[in-house]
Amino acid sequence: MRLLPLFGLLVIVVAVVVAAMALRRPSQRSEATVAEARRHAGRISLVALVAGVVAALGAGYTANLSWITGEALAGRAGVALISMPLAFGLAHTGTVLVGELTWPKPAGDVRRARLVRRGLLDSVPRWLLRLALATLAAGLLIVVAGALLSGPDGRTVTVTAADGQLSGAAAPFAGVDYGGPTAAGLVFLAALTFAALWVVAERPALGTADERAEAVLRRASAHRVLRGATTAALVAVGGLLTVSGLSIRNAAMSVVETGSVNGVAVGAAVGALPWIGGFLAVLGFLAILAGVGLFTARAPRRPADAPLPTGH
Image (cartoon, rainbow, N blue to C red):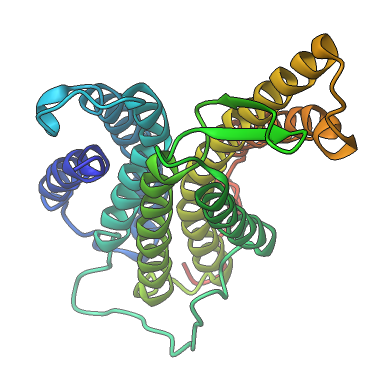
């Protein structure tokens, strides 16, 4: 039930976008189709951004409502924060997918079509694909490690030293309580992203002989798909890593300080944990910043004033 905020708003947003875009009329000329495709891409970007923000705010709000599960759950605020970037990514990617399904097509008595074999990843920016896959792998690794290291409550990490004489605990930590919703959101986001990239690859070509326009528009579509999804994943994974690193640091510091007061040696491994936790927290914060910065990366575009080939 904790995953409900990630999907309920997504269904509503996509349904509204489908209804709105279904009213478009196809263009009659290839030149008009290229221009309409540019305008359509701009509309997709704007609507996807709005849908993502609304879904994120809605997920953060509904995840804090006790009526979802009928009971007050500890750590609900943390689940809400984790749900927000994932809800943004799901709604944004879903909206872009719908926009690709409603891509402008030429109409009329005479149409052009090129027989070109396109692979799923032919139009995908390689650097963005590598970043997306690395973020997904890192997120799942953090969730697995958190599940193994967390306490029975699924959201606390405990550090012990001096043969169990000293111990410290802190939360929130990437255990099952937080890691479960994060892993589910990442997997669903990856599946939705794959579907959107498949739609981009299989989308019918525009009725134009301008190869540059066709190639750039398709690359821009793939860029939009991966940009939103990777941004959401980076922010979610970075947030989980940040709070987990701080919890490790706080739990270890508690042990170190108690040992110093009581004159008990805590060992070099435990003594290094505050630094390790701090490093992980900084790394997670940088991932969040990278995600926010990534969303500002512009998609490839063909200059509006670029001349069309002779014959248009």
